[in-house]
Image (cartoon, rainbow, N blue to C red; front, top):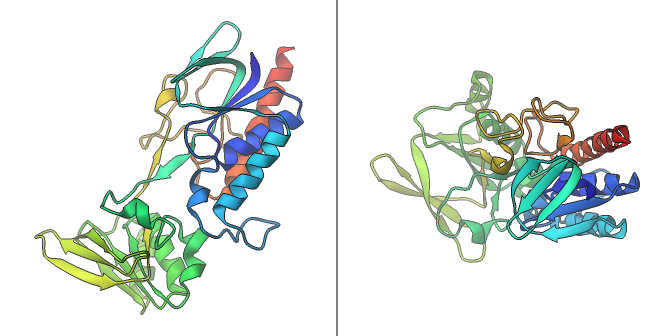
Length: 304
């Protein structure tokens, strides 16, 4: 029986595990694939307080080392479900089952990919899913934003401040973002809008050199770019927890800044990009991890 089981080892989950152990609670951290989450895709992190620059992998490695040093137990496995038990919760994984007094859900979300050939190959080598994280690397260069919602338009505005040229490519005949953002990018001389087109192929050997786009009739056009920013939505990883918490229409756990799910039994907490929130950055993820862990610790203390 653990005091806290944390599901997911991104920045939120790792920070939650750290805070749990510093509060002298027993903690098990369960991760199915990559320690560090999405931040590991960023070749250079320059917006985390206290560090001028580091790679996403370096950040994840330092945080993982800190967590292990503090005595957090780690299990590489995939959580299939979480069930209420007489003594707390039963966390059922693909290969095992674990008991805990409380559970912190920190599974994050993943960027929705384009789903085209060689996309994985170019992640970090010309394909990014975060202009805030990686936009500075394309100062004076030509980039393309794929998407037409608020996130895509906001990133287009951000990139247009430093990039030589920004293409905004939307698969629909219109943008789905706010009118003020649409008007903003239309007013920028270095932004070119391309509607009713999708990305068909990537061009380049070891790094991105361009993209081939096609319209609704199948006509293709090649564009030379130095980088691509994909902003077509995210996919939260919350399916195993649907019986316990309320999910919004996009699959995010409905939660406030206190990291308490809107509807859940006592002892369930949520942290990071898997919950409803307006800002999704590594700093807000680590903040969530601290808040959720401290809340879990107070809950466990109340049981005694």
